[in-house]
Length: 401
Image 1 (tube, rainbow, N blue to C red):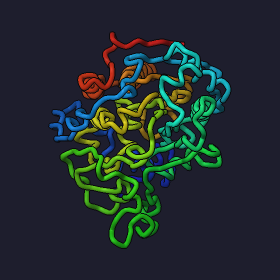
Image 2 (cartoon, rainbow, N blue to C red):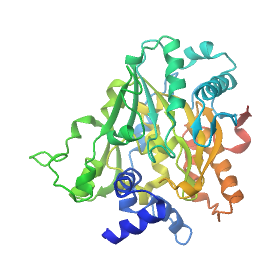
Image 3 (cartoon, helix red, strand yellow):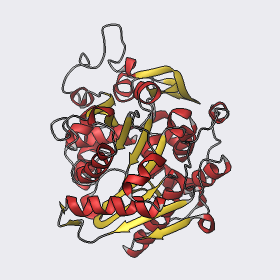
Image 4 (cartoon, helix red, strand yellow):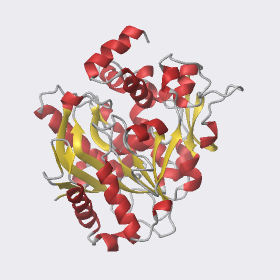
């Protein structure tokens, strides 16, 4: 990409060069932005879907914890205008919202709800979305409430891991061991931003033998296969660890975590959304840049079908204290609003179906031209066909508190 391209985007998006490089890596912008891809689909035939190993994933046995969980198709939305005002979060209000949401979802008080999701021996991974640090990233106070609930019910902080794909993004968004004392903070991979910007050589991320320093963080035995090759370039490897046709799951998911709580942010990606399923679909594996154009939304369904997510993901909390209705998945301040909501469900596809409809309504309200082509929601219907969730509007139980 030419240098001038970076400058024009920096100016338009209101982010600095460092932020742009990092966000581009996380969202796939450098390899064809997903919102641009989605826009293109309305004017031409959708490309044929490449072969994947979804059938292999679906053969795995379901267990009692498997999605869509104990409350398939049930989504609870909690709203409290006091939660966030002028960018300041009231942690006590957010904590109360979370607990009201648990009760609305389960019909039990928070303590009684705990054993529906966890055992005291569990190692719990909290998947956050740190993209757009401070502006549109997962709020620290939402995570505070979740950690407090886990700890109250017998899971010590040493058994809790706050994680994302990129380590430096976690730090930028405030997810540090100092802020969350006793909780492990884990990025599946590192990326050398300065090397991506051309400010230094590749020695900090590339070993003398030509391997990414994060290779050992991924499980070569558990992977999402798609018949699409990743570019064989050093910039691509810097961002994605591997190229080729395999996207490996992080060992954190395959070997360490026993349960996952998913806390995405309420935001768009073009005419689609970047919420519960995308937070895990693109955040759990490497070598994702190759997947955006041929498989974009399908990845959000198929990656979640693998047992290391399907049998461990027990709760989804979409953080809408502050949300973004346009310009996503990258942060654009002029499209950000305070919505003061949390959407909660054991069913990641049901909560995305609800949030997609709400975001479309918000985009229309804000005067954005909306394209409601089925391509933006086909992955949700696909998930229902696979038995991974409930997505038909008439089949969803929607509770508003």
